[in-house]
Image (cartoon, one colour):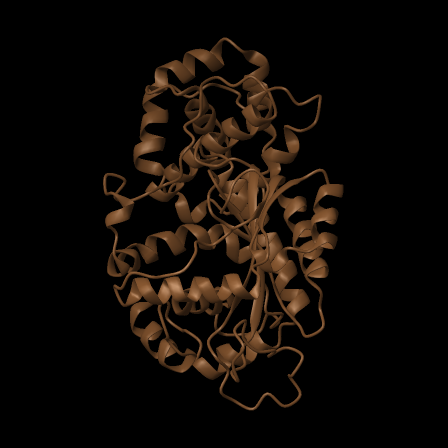
Length: 408
């Protein structure tokens, strides 16, 4: 429901005729939602759960701490009373019991989240709101300095973080397994997240550990997980990833820490050296950046940097024969569909006239260091060797050159 409210409210408030938070609360689609699991009253009651839900969302939107304010507000507005489907307005004690005794804690939390989301989406669309919404995401240990977090502390918070992110991200992914499978599809994505948060954990070993750490009754085996993931094409994965990032951006865009327009960085990174048989995959496992006999997969990424929340907007494999122009154009196309890009940062390997002209034609600025000459590379290696051996390096200083007003 929280995800649907986020999506529907964002679209609804974009319409020129939709200028009222109260009207949205009254027309919010709720018929599909099963309230029974969150209704602690077994006996029949006078007021339906969906009506009470709307009333409490309205109360939260105004920031009233007491039910009396809500009752008085609705009683003075017959039209609002009719929109809510109320023949009579419930009294304060009825509302108090409904909130504290009838609604589950989870449903109360959803009311608060829904109200905040509605206020944020309305305000983003320049619609008047009853109160200023808080723009922060749920967090644990806010008082801790993030710089003091070690790997174990991150893992300790992983369950909380992944539980929140899963509601936003998982709906964008699909394994196309059909409806007859006994293991819920989210269990596969939970396992994938579990593996990704830990260093050097293979699928089989990770699946065994996940069985004990997960609260799910059934979890996938390692070989089953690998087979399903491998069945997905690169194009399918990228499309699902872009959908997930779009949902995630809509979530973090409500926070004061996020700036939707900003700087992106494009980079190419390589995986660990590939030691298997690469026959038939020579165009994909293309080698390393350094001139060695090793081979590895290479990936190009575009990521929000600067003052923005650091999010990888898109990633793609680098194949043999592809030009840097093709790679940068592809990644910028994806990035500009998601955010407003002002500036592009790239390493010196992208220092190409064709690449820079393409970026300029888009009306974007860029910062790209000039390519090093052979003598400069050699000098840089001598300086680095001197630092590592704690000896004083000799020779002239590096004549670094940059394209732009500042150097990375």
